[in-house]
Length: 436
Figure (tube, rainbow, N blue to C red):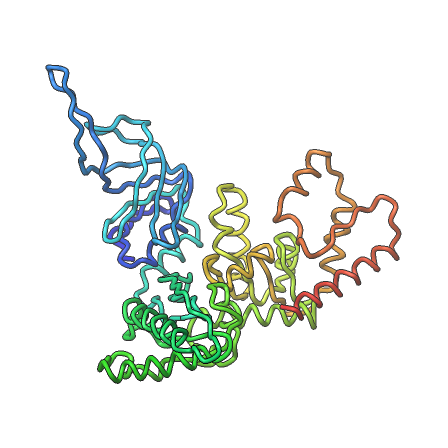
């Protein structure tokens, strides 16, 4: 992403002019553009012109429109961004207040105006404009007849190509058809690797499969590269990493990125750091649950005691259309940073971010144990006087409670029952962390 112009006042309202230069920049733009912002960009629109004789002609004209953003959608497969809204400036072809859809494109600059550029948005701009942030890991996960080629960047997993090929079954004395099918399947994968992987940027290429398919493919690829004098594959053979996976589907990347061999090879990448941090959180949830908590309210309470060492939070939470909730997350992040804690922003399009999203999207590793946090949460709900409408709102808000920590109702429940429930929760949490 290239920052062309910056015009912000002291209150951090104002506008930035940005130009997306890579496909991942479209993901950054998706996280920057929010409902209520103003977006100005060049677009093509059909214009109907009527002559004096009553005949009309339709032409497509390129123009610059400014819209009040209503919806933002992102197509991860095509890395495309569509923003719908109503125009707030009139020109000779488009009336003010009419609806239009802007399709953001690479190398097509846009101007984004916000009433408040908070710290999360400014960090996103700095991150996007840093040329060091690029895809540095590629992965090919496969099983017989199916393969997926992916690029793993710092912020998302980009699915490049899905390969499906029918492989004839092996039959006694008739293996030739099966072997020819596997060779065609491997040839298609090799072509996809050459097409989608830039070895000048990629630090490692993961080849993963169940059984020995990965080994058969790697040997076949080297033999074919030698025959065809494919120097890119031969010169970068040391970048290939052969690993086990349970299947060839994309979600197998989650287990692959936890492999210690991968973490050692990719120790300087953000993806590996996130997986390590998430592993550390799950181990603490199993062994020392008083130092690992997730869910907004309990994490905020820990922050009040300046107990948070690491805050894990997904970028999905900052795309909330509720401005009050977004500000609540921003204030939490700023407060953790001020108290000396470390904040890790996980991408919801990355394997690690998908896992964190299952834990409400927000978690914390504490500097010291705080065994009373759960009891505080229960005590707080016991003594709070809420109306039926407020209680319904709390139950419907998925950020109010940690779904894996029990919400107790204290109608006539004694303290012994509460202690039993708390022990049951901890046993369930340890079991879940061990299974993961």
